[in-house]
Image 1 (cartoon, rainbow, N blue to C red):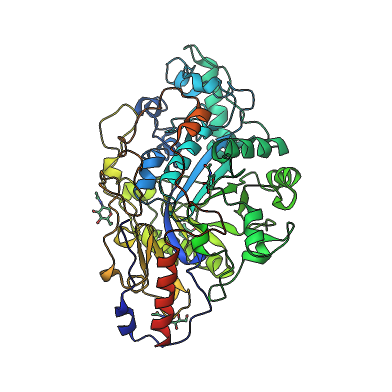
Image 2: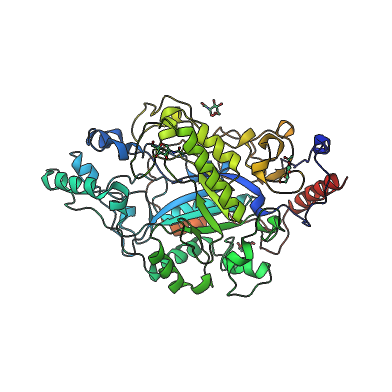
Length: 534
Ligand SMILES: *[C@@H]1O[C@H](CO)[C@@H](O)[C@H](O)[C@H]1NC(C)=O
Ligand SMILES: *[C@@H]1O[C@H](CO)[C@@H](O)[C@H](O)[C@H]1NC(C)=O
Ligand SMILES: *[C@@H]1O[C@H](CO)[C@@H](O)[C@H](O)[C@H]1NC(C)=O
Ligand SMILES: *[C@@H]1O[C@H](CO)[C@@H](O)[C@H](O)[C@H]1NC(C)=O
């Protein structure tokens, strides 16, 4: 195993006040910052589709111009948080059309047979922005499970699932634009649909079906949930009863004792987290399916200001640089001020104790301008998850079926030093990222943890290069990452993809069982304590 984590004793030379660390035998889950991808499956639509709309609709559509490598390649490169948009399709066949193509003068029926299979489809906006590296949710999940099985000591993988619901096409495009598009569709002559797809209303059954697909991939003969870390697992690890409120258990301001189960016990685990943009009606449906999240493998993220029961995760700084509801692709004059305001909202959420997901960029604005101010402010503000559309540098991204680069800038997002994760741990023992020059805070190598000055950190991962032996990997890992931007793969039976995954190595984790890196992590924690007490 590579990447033996090292704590530089140079930390002792920093001259920080010696003060006993809070009692902890391990780093805390909330003290780590990892890189995430936004709409992790997304592939930029073909240029011809955009061109068909001319300047009228170019704004919103240009915000879709980003492509991610396949999930496996992202995991290899250190990404530990995904976001998948899940569109309910219990009978199959609901999403097998593309009115957008018909508007562009091309046939509007999609012949990929996977669209006809029942089950959630992973895509951004039906009819328009539907290119996905893993169209079936079960395909995406099987990739995550196979990688997790092959790397049992990995840091927790956060699997955000945005549950698409009725009315989201209108919300995404705006009522005026949608009416205009319907008018164009009415006049279109190419074969295909005459109306746009409506995503079904979210009901309790939506969540039961979603859980069913998660379990169909992750369960195994000895564990009904496999490596999924459930809300009940967390309660039980904390000695709380089945109905206990996760917010009360887990929201702890930085500096207070770690509320989470030990990080070592969370290694190798996958945490599904629901993004409920549909607000209270979706939350009510979830509550109906799994009251108090009892029996659920999923927990929910709080998005807006309305408090959401049980939510210990929070989205922050998803705002647009352009401000308001206008989608402006030009950098505003006060971009730095807006970025600073977004970063402040991250600090506020972190200070409340949430596990915070924040986006370093949105709508491709930053990539077009080469503006890194938002990215740098967000990373420094200390959210646990920094999400981006630009894991791949902007000037290496291409639209479907095109060889031309979409952008002239090299805008991209990595954590400092290219690390997989870094500690948000102030070297006095107080997690207070905002008060610390980040270079002095910490870094993590591979999935081993390093807390110390960045200059002394082991080399980080370089995004999306072919890797020899991935750090933290065990033998038998997945093959090298395939080319990025690949067209959707031929239909495969997703359930059998999971069944064909290599069996997990022995000793991969339950919340109470040991992990290969426990000793290392515990050793680091002991060293930190020793340094601090010196
Ligand atoms: C089932 O999953 C658990 C949790 O990941 C793992 O510890 C166990 O080894 C797996 N068992 C089998 C038979 O795959
Ligand atoms: C940035 O400018 C816009 C438009 O002038 C304004 O509405 C907004 O409040 C400004 N934001 C900040 C943080 O200064
Ligand atoms: C990625 O971003 C970093 C930091 O802004 C920059 O130094 C680097 O050149 C970028 N990569 C590419 C390929 O442009
Ligand atoms: C760590 O946090 C404390 C309290 O917030 C602060 O006074 C101190 O300056 C921080 N340490 C460093 C190295 O910045």
